[in-house]
Length: 601
Image (cartoon, rainbow, N blue to C red):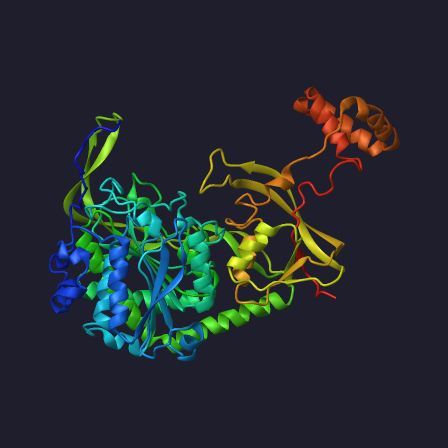
């Protein structure tokens, strides 16, 4: 039985001076009709409302304003409806109508981790200031807003004061994972959860131009009330990444700092015990929201307010970031939409011709090319832990600025040429279902077709010791690309790479991708040997094999002489020769998906 305790929320030793005033929040509440106040405001920022209460408020705003419509986009595993509110001055409440306006679509997502819920409350206030009090109605002159109150609605309703031990409020909050204990922010590419399938249908239908994902980060105490990250390197199309890095982020930083926020990059220290060694920026795998959106050539902003600051301070940061983001994207709308269209066209051109000398990024790690950076920390000292007996950090309240290095550039660790498309045997229905969930264009061969293409021999597989997000991942494999000509039966699925989803397809079907179907264990059966040779049956075959093939016999004898483990293992010796016979399963270790490198006949 757990010991009975009162909740002991932590708090930061330092908050930005402007946080005490939180001017934007105070002004918003002062202007609000009582009927449109959030639960959070009513409780002095001590609590957040339940899902149904939040939905009722958003329904009330949509009913009161002709410029808003609340859409149901799907259901959770427990059957709760998922919603997105569309706010449009043009009353463009369908994807076609919204695209026809020419305005950029900004998708704001909240509650993927429902304990990190300050974004939901801040978005409720901002929508009220756009639709009801009209204090920020002018934002709709140049953008269309798509706002999701809570993504993980089932997790949101697991209210408890005992979630998020590292966070300073609200008094009760939801749980990080879904009802089936999946972390949605690891699910974007593999799409296991029904919530994610609903999200993907919405995203791929509406195709927003800019994405905001509101979070609250754990971690060490520091001065920052918010840290930010965006894909800007090889994990997004170069021109769009350059816009994010050179235009959007500097202007956002400038405006936030003018509001009194202390803002920095979302980064982790290379050595937690020595900050002078530098900080690595962000995450890069497409299992995460912002990197997944980047596969569609869209800028994506990860907002991480600080868990040790008060819930009110977190909301203040979220609110101001969203206002400035909508202003900046609205001002840059025509340019941004042109950059996205160009990126889609250039990616389609890359998929229209096979160039073995032009590999596309799949995976990377942070390079050693850093830049000067001043980390805004908080002073600390060490005490001896009563639990571990080891030093434990105790933060103080004095701000300290530490000269160090910031590492944001990527070093590519995996890249392969883009094929014209992929051929997938019809039997692999799970793989096809995931592609369909991502809105991928596919068609089936109407007759048997002979194709020269490339596939992989996958050897030396290594699996994780424990499951991760419900799957046992392949942590390592040797992938050798081989060329072959084969005939595919009618019904085989062809996935062309001349489509907007090309980088999604590429990351899902290339084995070396960190979130590929191979890595997530969807193809584990290809590594399993299904038949075996009994020793007494195989003995005469082995003797005949060695007698007929002097080269094989020499290799067998060399292995016996040089590999003690092999020589001592009757099973390994038998297996070695068995694999040289036609009896051995030809499709074992062979990736069944084929890279098409010549136009289909």
